[in-house]
Image (cartoon, rainbow, N blue to C red; front, side, top):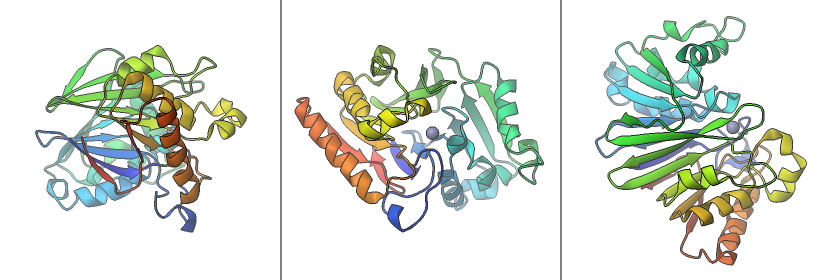
Length: 283
Ligand SMILES: [Zn+2]
């Protein structure tokens, strides 16, 4: 699998001179499967650049198909949706999976941000491409191209978020953004979903000190990402979904601190990287 990060920021875009290296766009990742199928995970503002790049290929001619997995519908995970150019090309088709109880509810949420008061197109039914919205149930694997996708809920404030485990040709990616564990820390369920992953993308919004000040936001600290990686015995950990107020320097420090945390836990063999816009990883 070939993965590309298009947006790695949490909560709100944060462009500017302090974020040029890691990037200021919100959550969006693309994944090219072993059979060439395209999976997109989350649709934050990073999806705009992904869309522009896809327009160079079949999506520009109305011959593209992709599957979009939505972890949840907070702004930073859907705000790129109305600005994803391939949605406006007739002939393209998309299967959209999200964690609502019904497809109708998920559609309502996605339509909500395109209501006339917020956006001129008014409905994603007017965008041109065919969008097939489906509700994804926890524990019921779905087949996407050559891959099997399993989803599990992680706590995230008032409404949970979905995490995804994607297995393709003997390789495993886990995407776990927006995980707000309780006082007992990383849950057994989260560790189980991440078990043995070749790459774990884990919410690392805060330092532990900053997280303690913002518990109500339902997001992880770096230490929880490290703990999950160690307990699940993953091979590589990508820090992700950085706080909007962290510049490149602070993210560098998160990565360095994560390296020390892994070493102290006896996990010297686990690679750690800071997700950055444009970074490509082969899994
Ligand atoms: Zn988020």
